[in-house]
Amino acid sequence: MRKRISKQNKQEKATISLKKIFIITVIFLILAGMMSVMATNQKLTSVKILLSSGYEMDVMTTSSKVSDILAENHIVVLDDESVTPDIDEELSDNRTITITKGAKQANDDAYMSAEEILASYTQIVEKVITEEVEIPFETITKDVSNGSFATQNRVVQTGQNGLKKVTYRIRYQSGAEIEKTEIASEIVKEPVDKIVEVRTKQVTSRSGGIVKGSVAEYQAYAEKRCFDYGWSDADFNALVKLWNKESGWNPASHNASSGAHGIPQALPASKMATAGSDYLTNYKTQINWGLSYIKSRYGTPSAAWQHSCRKGWY
Image (cartoon, rainbow, N blue to C red):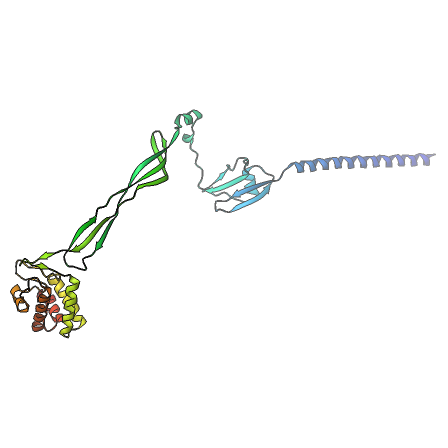
């Protein structure tokens, strides 16, 4: 009898133990499910981080606070940097964190109430107007003197300004112009260029005769005569410098104080009469006498030029 009761008690205890295990298992499964639901409710969000160096990062996070997101990604904000949104704020709707150089400075004085903003607001007025604008003419100079030592300018065509209509879009604020943009233009009248010709000026010598020719013409003749004398290119170059200094190769050049005259500055001028009676106006007569003088006194134009450099005359 005792043995049967003992066996029955053991079976009852075993049944209770199985019930306990079943109940514990059910509770565990329920708790695990709740934790899974809680974990699922923590939504991952894509956030863009713009560093002050210009580098961009796209990160995933379950955090919403700026400081937490930066910490998760091991980003340290330096003293000379500022963060938008503020480091202690929640992430904004655009899900972007921007780090820039330059710390933010609070300025309570910059705060304006809605009433102050409305009071300071001034409407911007925009107008489209058309104006007539002058087009300046250009001046064109033409040298037709052929290198003459004496020249004069003559206007052969008078210049006239042109005219165009220009349409602008102009913006005004408080009656003052703040922006002006050209949006169209139309030429009404083309400008006319002013044309000036540089011509050879007729020079009258002391005798009343007209001096003709140009410096280029005079020097070309002198170069040929130098070669007739058997002189070199260096001698001719020295001659050019010598008579540039004396008269500028001007047959009508006359020194009022000394009486020296012509291209070679003969002193007195009458010395050149040995080369021709037209010595006061004819450049060939003056050059022929001048070269003959240099040949007899210095031998070459180079020697005459050297003497002029040392003494100031030849």
